[in-house]
Image (tube, rainbow, N blue to C red; front, side):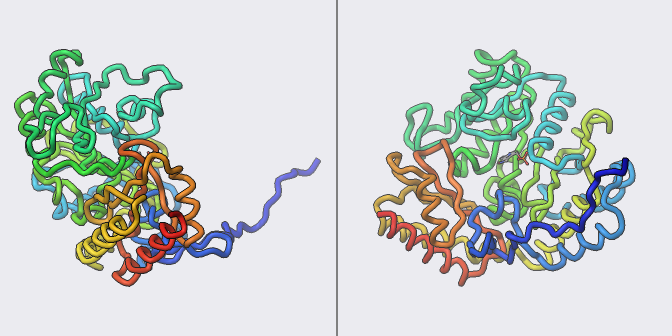
Length: 411
Ligand code: PMP
């Protein structure tokens, strides 16, 4: 009997196309305020990156990471002047943020010989069993057995809803200072690291007060606890500096930084870990994946770094973030259903009243040509506004006009 295998030329997904900050879906054109899944940081067709990916595909689509080690090291050098100066080593074996955070946990545990990981209420660190276990979004965990026994959740710098009932600026930064109590009463006493998102993404775009990072660093130094900055959302320019840890959150001085999402520029999966040189403790077989450091991922990462530098993307974020933030504030002043505008760089958000069905609002945005995403927890009902970092000043105005029309038709 002859084989029934059918071979036909692939035609891709003809209903979908990307063009800068715009996504075309079945004949409709949207401004993508979610940058894909917060990963298409340089827009859908950043010219040099797409061409380099095509070229690589023509050569070879997969290589085991044993062949790409030198290339990974070269890319680390290319990124070096964008990193906090104390960072001196990297681990580039992942394609997801979850995987990079798993690697960071392993590094922290192996380097310190300690077991426990502190993480924040409302945090999100991934979808694997381990990273779900350390995430502070309990609703995602309820259907499963506690997946990570050495996880200890600590209060977040969530000033709108302070765990300690304090008022911002007069709070003594208890959420960063009182970790000793958690070591004493809630942990095994063996705490390896605390994991923090410099701006808490899925938890509701929570922006900690600037002093939070300094006090957390001081506290961790006192307790001998490492800091892991989960920069999966904040990295690669999103908050206006290459990493939040080199800008808004510089006082955090993290021992370990994880990245993913925007590192692939046009949406190619690539993820990694950056760390102090003395934390470079993993053997190659202790953490890797089939597709880790694959050629397409490395090309995307290298070209993304080059693009950000060559096209002065951080300057663009600095130029457009203010007008976007001020435009959102003006809309909040005009529309009672919009409040709580907050954000750093192009990681902005606002709240809707709790009575509002955020999914309905997002559907209405779609009718006005906007792709928006909500948070299902955090302050009230949060709508995130995080367009690609290449958005122009004129396109910011277009986005605000469409949001205005969405709000008008909503109210
Ligand atoms: N950390 C943060 C802060 C995230 O926002 C996410 C994804 N939303 C992850 C980790 C997990 O990344 P991935 O989905 O690539 O596994």
